Length: 80
Image (cartoon, rainbow, N blue to C red):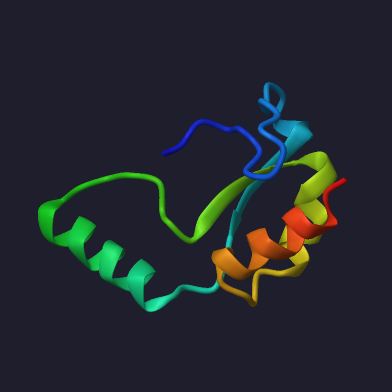
């Protein structure tokens, strides 16, 4: 897993109440990654998941129906 650092603003999430991990709709590449990890009994941070601080968590959670690459474009465009 990646450390809990906001994917948008790089804020370190020291306290669990500062945000959270959000999973988004899987792309074909995400499914292939999962299959590979299962096959090799590997572990790692799912490519369709991202950490978000409290400033970005709510909006990210509202966009879970989208793949992460689209979500990041939206959130970065909205970030001042």
